[in-house]
Amino acid sequence: MFSKAKHTCNKCTIDQFIMRTKAKQLVHEKLKILPDLTAEDATKLFLELEIQHIELEMQNSELHKAHEEAEEAKERYFELYNDSPVCYCTLDEEGSIIEANERTTRTIGLEREQLLGKKMSDFVFREDQDIFYLHQQKILELSEPQTCELRIAKSDGLPVWMNISATASHDKRGNRIYHLVFNNIDERKMIEERLKNKEKMLLVQSRYAAMGEMISMIAHQWRQPLNIIGLATANMKTKQMLHMLDEASMDENTEIITENIAFMSDTIDDFRNFFKPDAPKEPVTIEEVITIALKVIGQSLVANNITFAVHNNSKTSLLMHKNSLVQVLLNIIGNAKDELIFKKVESAVIDITVNETEDKIAITVCDNAGGIPNEIMEKINQPYFTTKKIYGTGLGLYISQTIIEKHFFGTLTWYNKHSGACFVITLNKKERVG
Image 1 (cartoon, one colour):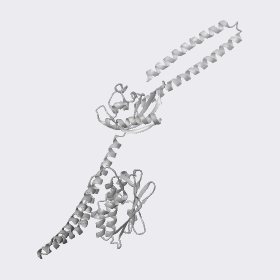
Image 2 (cartoon, helix red, strand yellow; image 1 turned 120 degrees about the horizontal axis):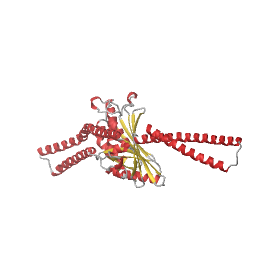
Image 3 (cartoon, one colour; image 1 turned 90 degrees about the horizontal axis):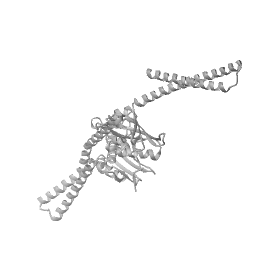
């Protein structure tokens, strides 16, 4: 740095000498064309020349100072650009790299000479090529800064997640160029992936936790048909012992047994379908979802003397994962059922109301179990928080809210009314069918 400054000063001295020589020549030439001067005129002339000389020196000093400041600014820019914690690079109109800072070379794992002239798309991870292409197209079409997230393939073949911000401009010759800024978001993506896996595990845990309740519900569903089958079998056996079992009686009892076996088989199918992984989205009405949920839990409600009523004004079909919404409804209805049983509410009621507006569908499930205590109102959706002692997992409402918000892009809220608690599922109709 010191030698560079000394070299600059030497250059300035040479320039001053050249300027002074030229100034002398000009003075001599002027003196030749001027008539004889008096002493007073000569004094004035040389005074004017001295003033001009001082002005030139001042100007030269200012230029020298400006030159030094420009050099310092250039060095600062170079250091900021090269040693930046983010990757900077510039592409030409064809997408080839024409400039890249040190961070870019270290991230990709190649020397600058190996990067320059290469297509930027050569370093984009194979599965993210479409993202990069669409990103470039948006810059051209919209003529404004664009961002995207994709993986850059390093020289060792390992991908690294980057957030890319890009703008388009023109160089001095008028050619279009692109300025790209890369921010490493690998750590953020790892955290997001861990959260996603955690949610998947919680969802699986929630479904397994629900299996115990399902088995209880199957028992309620099967109790009556098993009793009927037992009575029909006993009837046939008694008539056979009394030699009264004719063909008509045999057919009648056989038909009773067959119908009830079919009912039990359907019940198993309903429960088995619920635990299947979600099929692709399909057009489903809210009425269909409620019907499936009540098929599963209905007998349990009847067995516990709980009345349920459905008020539905929605006929719109939505594209959805049907079983996911069934799971949410079963959880909310199941919680209401447990509260009604625990508090031994007389004339227990669960009321389901569906209201449809221009852009939303709201499913409200209310009970008359007295409501949610104020001290736990804000806690009931937290993972592993439960009021059911050893019988609860604390996952039901947390998973239900996660499903509604992340899979249906809706909301799940709750409030108390005079006689009990209400839970409201609000769904957007943007994926409406028909």
